[in-house]
Amino acid sequence: MEEIKKIIEIINNSIKEEPENTISSWNIIKDWYDSEVDSYRDIIKNWKDWLSNYQEKLINETKIQNLRIKYTNVSWYFIEISKSQIDKVPDFFVHKQSLVNAYRYITSELKWFEEKLIEWESKLAEREYELFQKIREEILDDFKKIKIVSKKIAFIDFISSMSFVAYENKYIKPEISSSYKLKIKSARHPIIETIEKDFISNDLELDSKKYINIITWPNMWWKSTFLRQSALIILMSHIWSFVPAKEASIPLVDKIFCRVWASDNLYLWQSTFMVEMQEVANILNNSTKNSFVIIDEVGRWTSTYDGMSLAWAILKYNHDKIKAKTLFATHYHELVDESKKLGWVANFSVAVWENDENIVFLRKVIPGSIKKSYWLEVAKLAWISKEVIFEAKSMLKTLEQEHDNSFKQLSFWIVSKPEIKIVEKESEIEKEIKNLDLDNITPIQALAKLNDMKKKLIFSYTC
Image (cartoon, rainbow, N blue to C red; front, side, top):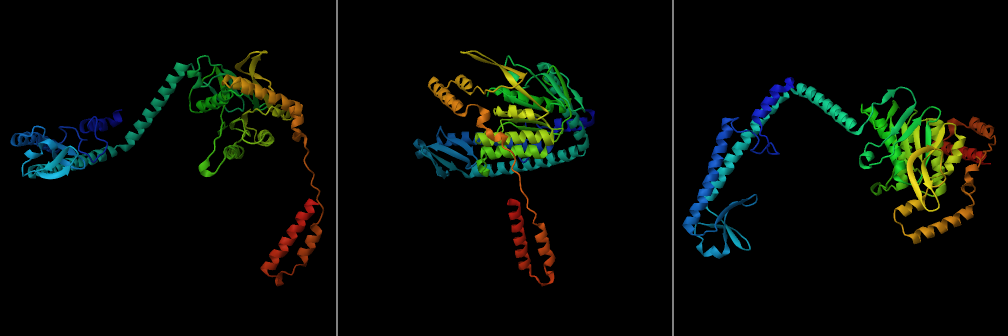
């Protein structure tokens, strides 16, 4: 702090501990710093004493005991007398305002006092502002020193805060590497673990052989927690922070993308599904092999077939083209079977224990998938009535019987790509182009000819 010791002394000696919020006020400069400021303040203080003495004088002269001299920002100074004392008001009182239960007056002496007080307060404010400007200019002379010290203080504050949080929450130092592999052992959510007493930690591993994890599990908050804690740990490691885990080997990432929830944007006429698709488009257009992506329930805001088709296409595009390390959570269990066609995908789920009467969500991520979302069980936990649950079960059984199994229901997965039969027509068009008399054709005729050729080409591709 030696670099700015002079500045500290200037501020300590000149500026009040609790100054006014605006520099144009007259309560910024400390007492005894400037003789002119002190003299103005003494005058104003004496004027305040004059006001008190004048009120006492008026009470003695008029015998109106409840006479008061008051002030408002609108009316400034005035004498207020209740209506019951109106017969005692002397002639030199000039009426100023009538209220429900009182009258307000002004006198020539009070008006003179008001003008003088305003004059001295204005002079004091001008002098304080002048001093403030000089102090500011003097400080700005050493601006570079202030900037250097502020950066040092900010860095110390950052490191000490991170150190305190790491110590209090038992974080560990992550290993930052230039390799592609990501490995986190016993990962925890830095916020949720401070609220949830028995927080269950989980492992995560992604590498060049398995860089996409499809996660299927009950529709509970642990899924989102797992996704977000993974992204947070990677982010924390990139800002020099220790992380909530037992071990962590973190590769350098260029970007972190999160498609974790969506809400509509009615102001811009965008539905929830449109907002979601815009987020997905941003991921597909800007992520790279060195990015980390979490996608939670993409395609849930439209019909089952549409949503599942989109989810599959998004998953496959990332797998084939981008190859970003990705956690892809979904309730479309059909994606699990389809993902077997992809070489670098692993399936995970949350451990669930159940019997005929009870079910327990264990919150532990394990290899393998599940084919149930446990919607009805979650609904029970939310205290949905038994009558509604029973009706839902009946409908579920009916649907399962109608569709037999989900794969038969979604036969669109095995639809082959249509073959496009192209009939050779280029030779005719080439002849037309060669026979065109460019020297004797108008622009409109040329456009018409071009449009005719275009129609012939389209027709030939669709035959």
